[in-house]
Amino acid sequence: MQWPRGDFCKNMFARCPAGRPGTVDEVAHVAELLLGPQGSFITGADFLVDGGAAASFFYGSLRPESDDNRWNQLCRKSHLA
Image 1 (cartoon, one colour):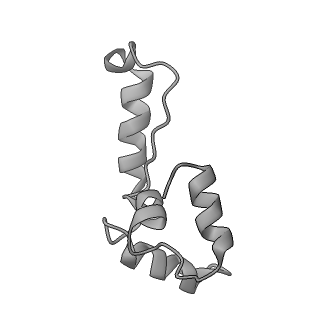
Image 2 (cartoon, rainbow, N blue to C red; image 1 turned 180 degrees about the horizontal axis):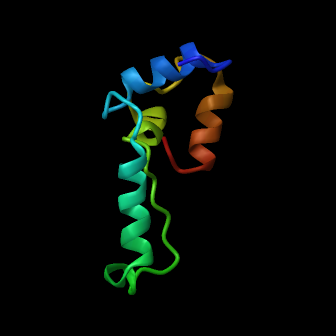
């Protein structure tokens, strides 16, 4: 990955549950569901198509290691801790 934050992205993908970035087809499958007749009853929902990266950030291997109380306070305010 030749992005300015390439090392960060490589680490994030390696440590998230899927262990890799998603493919265009995987994202397209979610769009197909939502836009097709199978998704006609879905309203007002958020779909994270991230291979579990968001959950890992708050609860798993991607959670920042910090003794800073600011992180814990943020989690408590968001009911994440």
